[in-house]
Length: 485
Image (cartoon, rainbow, N blue to C red; front, side, top):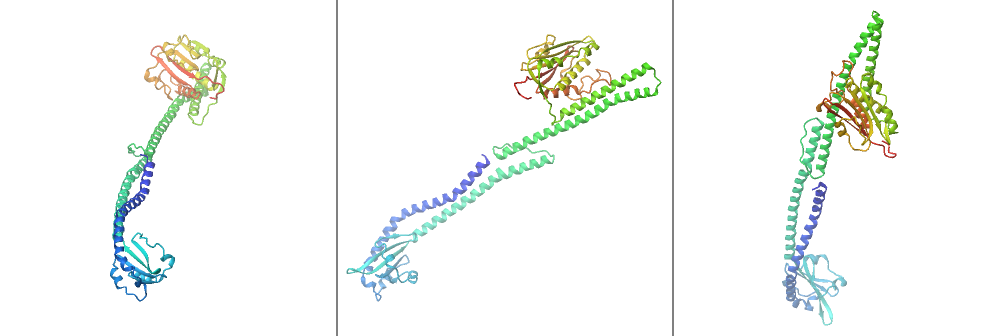
């Protein structure tokens, strides 16, 4: 049950409790009244008849009358008062009434003659006494309802006792439930939060179907997300430290070579041919260092949460035709056969500079891992347009989603399954010894490629088969209407 519902229900019960007790007391007293009414009325009539024969004597209503017989009729439960016709009190067996007033107005005195009136604690009867045709006096008789009053008091105390006992019981139950449903889980939740804040193990809370359960579930979700974010930050920090150490190490080798060849040129003892070779090596090492720093800068930029890549709409046929052209010379230098295909229609939203970087990275990897005499395939094709030169496992990897595929395929030894799980991780290189020392890449190219494609709302994957070859497949969605990517 929800805590809100439980509290409202408890409040409702507490509010109804005094009303229920009052109604129960009223009903019980009313039932008791009906049971006693007839009996009391008949008893009062009997007593009234017994005293009326004496009180109807007109001689009793003179100031000098003898009221000794009237005194004999009066008891603790019955009082008699005699008035003159004008309202003066001649006699009363009730000393309190006798002392309070000696005269009663006629309008009040003459009211309710012959009527046996009932109040909470007494019956009252008044009747005039005639002397001839004139009123000689008026007598008033009162009967105290001791038994009735005692019964009502007993029932009132009984109901009050039941009410008090039930209230104490209800208070105890509510206190117990409040401690169980509110205090205990709240203290446990506070303990969880305190433990989490201090980095201690967090004691799990049993699932509850109320607001505290929802709060505990939200806290548990938040805790898991913060733990995950903490682990991610730790992993990123470790990755940064590894990246700095790795790049520092990779920069040290070309810097050492540049320094050595620069010192040799400065010494002037080498031949002209050697000087030209030293010069070319210095330029090559400088270009390698620049490429490494450029990749590092690009990777850091793509990692930033504030970086927004600007995408513009382009004609697919014209843009991708330009994108896949210009790599023949690089392949010819290494005696590699390059097959190029472009078949794209429609508009796409792209960042031309970053997609050029993607193709450059992928082609550089393909050329570096293809032996002379091998083949490389480069294609930008619409969904459903599959180049003939694609390996069978590459054709199977092409999906049916609307858009286009950018494919870079090369012959080679291929990669194992466990290697492909890490190829898009930064600084990962499947074969550290594949190229000459100091000439291998930074290991950031595929990671940068993945991030650029994802910022184009696309996907990238690598497929490979041992002793056949490898392919990187990028998918980009087509632009729809005036949609801004």
